[in-house]
Length: 125
Image 1 (cartoon, helix red, strand yellow):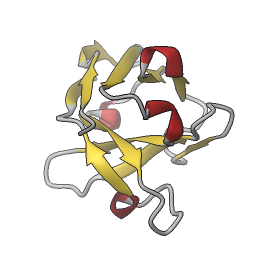
Image 2 (tube, rainbow, N blue to C red):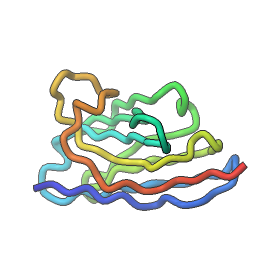
Image 3 (tube, rainbow, N blue to C red):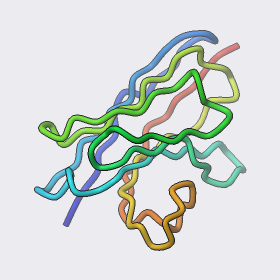
């Protein structure tokens, strides 16, 4: 069974940067598209970014476009989220997830079948 483990979260000031990593166990990582989501207290989990299996097609939420970059290294079974120009509203628990392609909607939580435990990102003003 595939397991996903996120790391790289922390506390950063407004305008700072963080790089999140998500390491997947198992041999099928390179066959799947992956996504990053986030969830702030009292809010629903929301889509952040998506990357296809090859790493050459990406999608972003409008709120992070131009500031965040998703990438992957299939040799290391790892997907990354580089976050620049961080804002207080980016504070949340960030989760990586494996895309199950149920309806083809990359921004829907229901199209992902495996989730990590999350890593906390806090941005101070």
